[in-house]
Structure formats: C-alpha cells, structure tokens
Image 1 (cartoon, rainbow, N blue to C red):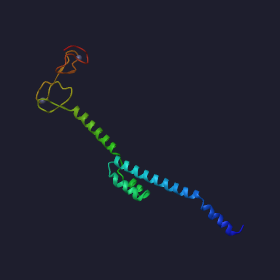
Image 2 (image 1 turned 120 degrees about the vertical axis):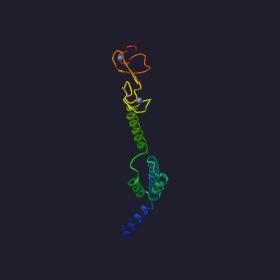
Image 3 (image 1 turned 90 degrees about the vertical axis):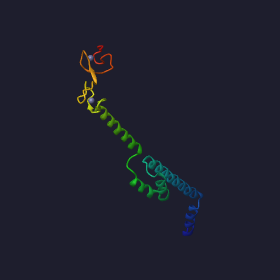
Image 4 (image 1 turned 30 degrees about the horizontal axis):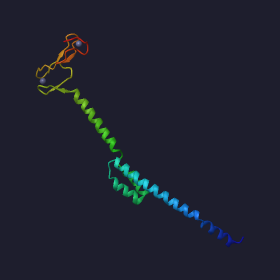
Length: 149
Ligand SMILES: [Zn+2]
Ligand SMILES: [Zn+2]
C-alpha cells in the first residue's frame, strides 16, 4: 500500500456521513446546555431579586464566561430567605413587645401579672381568692385552681 492510498483512506474516513451527524449532535447539545445556562441564570437571578433579564442576556452572549461573572457577582441569598428572616425578626419583636404591656389608663409600662398599675393605681387584675394568682377582671373561675371567684 503506497502512501497516497493510505492518505486517501484517511480522507475517505473523515468524509463518512457519521462525522456530519456527530458535529451536528455536538452543536445541538452545546446549544441545549447554553440555553439551560440562560434559563438557570434567569430563574436564579429572579429568586435573588436581582435583574434577571440582564443576567440572562449576559449568559446568552458570553456563555460560560457570563455564567462565571454572574456566580461571582450575584447577591448571596435568595429573596425568600430574606423575607423569611424579616418575618422571624418581626415575630420576635412582637413577642418582646407583648411581654412588656402598657397600662390601659395611663399607658405606662406594666408587667403581665401586675394586679394594679404602679403609676396610676388603676386596677388591672384580680387575685384568686384561693391561690392568689393574677386573674383577668372578667374571669369567673380561676384557671389555675378551678375555684369560682
Ligand atoms: Zn396606669
Ligand atoms: Zn386560683
């Protein structure tokens, strides 16, 4: 077999239609992955409450490079996390403020188990005739010892 025949074989090998299919397949997969990157970036950016369309376009134009830039620059937490944390803080605030009530007459701070306001002497609670626990003024029976008032 002389060298030209050998070269012809190589050329013939690369002219097989399978190469065309393979290249088209690789291009197809690359486009799919590319679009998946764009979609993922759009969704992630929206969850993080940052400009989703802008970042999707950046990834669409720069592909891997755009994705890396986005991963570096994106806000560190999801918007849901931020909302969740703010709700938690508000809940804690409510609990704390509920603990320190204020007198209905003078508005000054009182504790939950005060029987009388120390500032204006307004009667706040009754004490149970049996166990002396503080009871709301309209309670008919003590919830601690079950004795009728
Ligand atoms: Zn008062
Ligand atoms: Zn009682």
